[in-house]
Structures are given as C-alpha cells and as structure tokens.
Length: 172
Image (tube, rainbow, N blue to C red; front, side, top):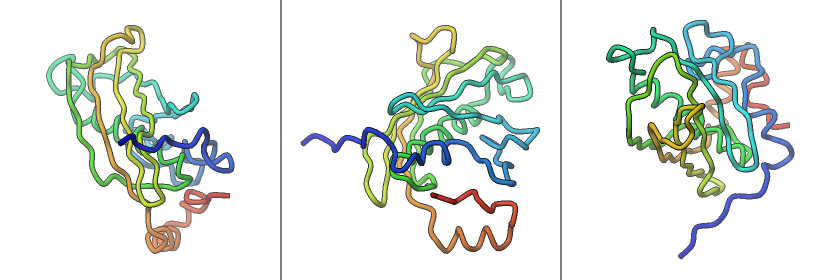
C-alpha cells in the first residue's frame, strides 16, 4: 500500500504566511527573530522541501566543539513542523523520533531540511535531516515526526492573553 502524496503546493499561498512568524510575538527559541538567545531559524521553501541554514556558536555546544543534541532536535522539530504548510494549518508536535549519525560541529553552517510524507486533515507526517551546508553528502542527524493541529480554543486563549500574537495564527 503506497502512502498518499502531499499536494503539489500549500493551499492559498499559506507557505508565505506560515513559514516564518511575522506577528509581534517572534519569541520562539527555534524560530523567533526577536529572541536574542534563540536559533532565529528563517525558513524557505523549494518545491516540497522546507529548509533553513544556521551556524551554531559555542554557547550551543554540549561536548567541546560539538553542537548539543537538544539543539539539533530543536532544529529538526521546527523544520519538520513547517511541513504542515501543506495542510494549511499551524500544528504542534505529537511525536518526534531522531537518529543522530555523527557529531555536528559548532561554528560551521548547517542545513536542516524536511518534506511532508503524509498530509491528512488532522495530521501531517514529515521526514527531515541535518547536514553540513558545505558538505551536503553526509547526514549528521535525521528525524521523522507527526504533527497535529493547534486547536481553535488554544488560538483564542493565546491571542486573548498575548495580543502580540495577533496575526500569528491567521490563514488568510
């Protein structure tokens, strides 16, 4: 049995609105442009691939000179979750499985990428990986994830508590 293929493009140009937070919030550790302590990942789309590049510095290391595995997990989680643009919804992680293949160095540009593998109304599955940007043949880590929609109740609660989130969940 073959899995359904994701649509050729997100509905109604949702990718431009949903790949990067343009609200007043922007405080996410992974993608928040206004979080000086975070990764500040900025996402792009090429066909069905969602990707970002990041050069981690020493403050994100675990072992000397090696990027902390939790930071790699964050990069993969953020990027895989962006595959939800193919469903036209903001989604949260339900499951994330990571396989670390090789130590990722600090101070070198990394490229994290993901593609949707299955798109349903209530679920998006995605697969992704982290590679050295200048040595793309070697996979440093790979992941598979499942993402479920953010509820309307959560959207209402967050925008009422945090007015700076206005526009974050917009789909139009």
